[in-house]
Amino acid sequence: MVIGGHTDGFKPLETLEYFADGAWHEVPMHYSHDNGFALPLPDGTVMIGGGSAESFGIGQSWGVEIYDPASHRTRAIAILDRKRTLASAQVLPDGRVFVAGNWYADDALALFDPETGFSTLKEFPSGWERPWIFPATEGEYLVFGPESNFGAPAGALVERLLGDAYQEPLLEKWEPACNLGAGSHNNCIGGNAYLLAARRRDNGEMGLLKVSDGVFTEVELNASIPLVGNEGQPIDWMAPVQVDRPRRQAWMQAFDRDGRCHFARIDYDAVLDGGSASVDFFRAACPEGRFALGLALLTPDGRLVLAGGVAQDERKTEIVDDNFATAEDVWAFHLEPLAEAGFPWGWLLGGILLSGGACFLIERHFRKRHPAGDDTPETSVANTKLRTDLMTQMSSLIEEKELYRRKNLRINDVATELATNKTYISAILNNLSGEKFTSLITRYRIEYAQRLMREHPEMLLDEVADESGFSSRTSFFRSFKALTGMTPQEWKKIV
Image 1 (cartoon, helix red, strand yellow):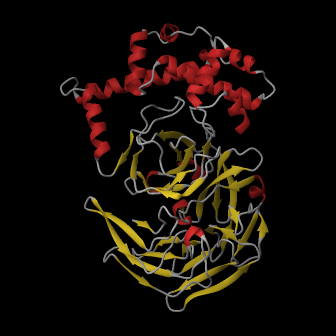
Image 2 (cartoon, one colour):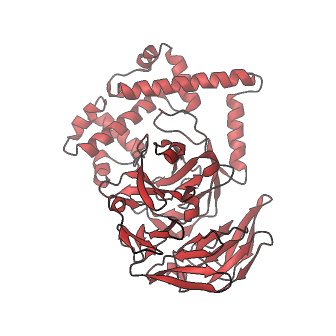
């Protein structure tokens, strides 16, 4: 279901919608909850509370209601302890609910009891916008930022329900990543252990923290989380971690300036025993131009579904919400990589409309490539694995030997190294990635050039072009502009 939000005119909506039987159905609510919270409760109902009181995201509101998916009705309950917007909620084992967070107003930790309603438990001298609320030891809860209740960096302060506030050393190094709205229950990997997306305060590098029984530790990753995509566009990891506990996986989501969706899949099983996590990366380009900025929620069947959202302000060099332009599209991402680890990026099999129209196009494309009767299922699986293995070997070879830095690198050179022929290499590339060999090598060269410009800003662009394998300055500039939409000089200004 999708709750609240606002229209193109930035006017709050007083409805929710649920998807069933191939269609969306609208349900009236008692209040609007743009910038409110939604918390699934143990009995299957959903608590919806707070939000902006006026259009344009202004003010805070009191209202709280319960939505029952069985009857598709809402009922108002006791009001909050104070007017709130951009708040977070956490359900307790006994069914009571903690609420904290506010925006441009005072903040406190409040408790909801079905018998007595909402009451303030502890005032916060400095509050937060959409804070994290993590259980620690028995009866103790931690509350901390990404941002203060007035939009400033939250710093390393951690409030406790029972104990005194303290400065967490790891939060002096790492800043919790922006929370688009998923509650703390989505981060739980078991017991009182939670994963938290975080950004280094000194260089913006993305990483993961584990908070277990109130203790913060860094999670070792087998690969760095990219901040720049293949096309040279900066990637903003703006969404929280979402945990798929049955599969022992967690997901992070990002957008780039061209409106593509990026995902990181973290296999965290080893983390439970103090080991490192493995990471794979995926991306999807919107067939209609740009995906709306919004949180893609993880479903029980392992998909991520993006419903609605707002546009990206194209006048900005960074990613900025355009809250006056909303979307009604709904996308389901089927997250299966087409290539094994070692290739620079995986691809999503498709971001598809729930209406099924894009499903039809993907199915047609598959049947055209693989006519019925060409292979038995066993042969097809074996051939696919052989092609994928060779693709992985080729990627590893190109990366480890930095073959792309050779100015006259040809597909024959790679085929010889792999003891195969150029026709087979070309066919595998087209089949698995839809990419030509020259495009692949150009992309490697651009990524290497970007790394040089980041790490050695003093280098002349002619030197960068030469070191990256381009035959000339003109070729470098033309390829860079085609892939990133910017000249090298323009790109350097924004990194």
